[in-house]
Length: 295
Image 1: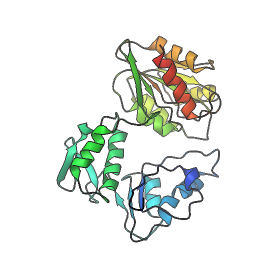
Image 2: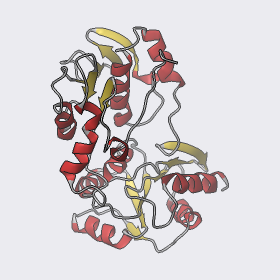
Image 3: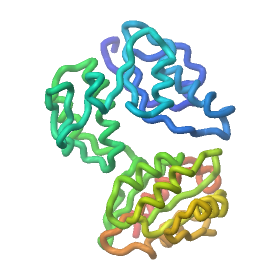
């Protein structure tokens, strides 16, 4: 109906030829991606910028407080004043003492959000900031957070078996998403990564592995496996790396299960595209979920 509010999550491919920006633009942390399709980083960010470029004075934009690409997108229009979420300076939602705040007013505890990871706390700040442009009801905000169980393929807890938790993060098709997944846990981790190279830079991922003392095993699969393993070793990653020749998800899960002990987490967070072994990331995650549930 005319008064309904619709929320879209849009990729660079959907934004590429957009000629009208939405009423509300939420620009999360942007990392270079799809460089096997886009002409380069500027083309990728330029496509993303259409979410903001055609806004009017009646529209609003909230963007990541520290990410340079997000700031570049926010500056792509002068129609209104964009504001940063996650910090108190711009009057949007931020976290203090385990609470979501707007200004000096507490909204609710961060415990209302059941999703793991600091990146999801940041995303909640963005979502609440946007929501408060159209509603003024903190109790509804808290209820929305408490009822949200996350989405499939995004650090989705599949099950716990023999004291090991298995997470499906197949949506992770870029290294930055894998970085976020690794940082979401402090218990020992077995990470499954790899697939097709999209021209991504894995330097930050390597630095994350070097700093993550709780990562106990890497299983690298797919077309990029040898290249990625050599890159990580060349950047002084010291965790054990299995360059796996297996070609089925059933075999991949079996390898991960063989390394796992009670208290560990197994995370499928490939950081790469899926088209070498799977139809798409949905297929990759669906297979992982089905096989883990059948163990």
